[in-house]
Length: 372
Image 1: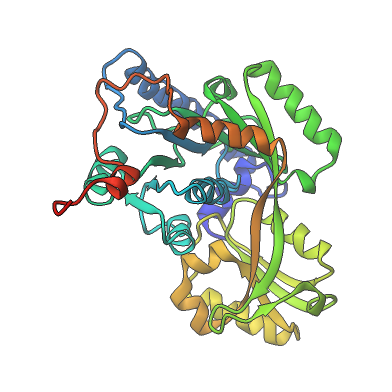
Image 2: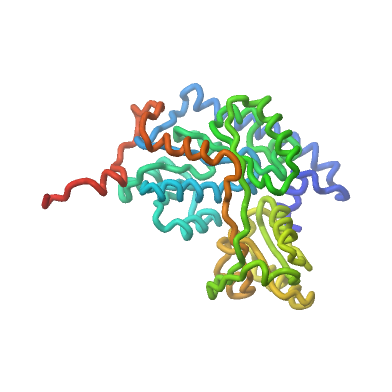
């Protein structure tokens, strides 16, 4: 077990027999206090004007979370992008870096969108807009990103493990105290199909006590089929029923992956779980391959997120089946669309005196050429 995995399990209170748990927990609690103090200091520096928040001259949507990993931000960014592309509006997705698995996945799935990558997302947005006009900006993982103003604040919460033990990182999985939800405009409750209905309603009730202004939307990941990335072959679920498989994943909520496979009547013989965003080594992938052969599994199965993260190594060593899923908004989709439509319909309330002004994609398409 890596140190990263170890501390992740500690943060989720999943280490019960470790002899060092009694020592690490109070130390991590102290570290959480310092983290919280530093975060409030950083947030406050923007609130009182020490650092200035900047605005773009077009709508900005932030898609983020309050918990550490595995909430479903990336599928929602894809959903929102496709919503605008379907209305002939070009989205610009601003993310921290192209090296992340989410960024690679989105870039491959959304060839008609624009992307800006970099720790300084304001500068990345400026540079991208100067070369590639866009109509709307999507801040990927933007809830804790303060330099850029936004018009719509969307927060995703995974109902399987919404807040962990309630502590801030590193003792828990919270990136901010739950009072931060008072900043949100819209809250997406994800994976609602994997928990009991009463748990969803109890979660809503808890959140309403903290942030009564929030509108709720419910969603889940619908499995579509498996595919072989090296050949493009699709394998539908009726062909996989009862088959023995070895699985591996490095995602924030591996439990959702396992529940989905079980519901598809697929027999998981051996499961390898790694920390979120784990970069698989050749040795680890070879161990998975050997385990598959020794256990007489018929296939190796993983997620799209894991495949895109280490595509070159995985396709050579394992050639796994990839589970293809899509985000389905199961409740109040019209409300979500209303929020998204309002941004491109005009009448934004945000003050834009310091806005970064660049041509929009729509303006460029309709601008007369020099020959007209």
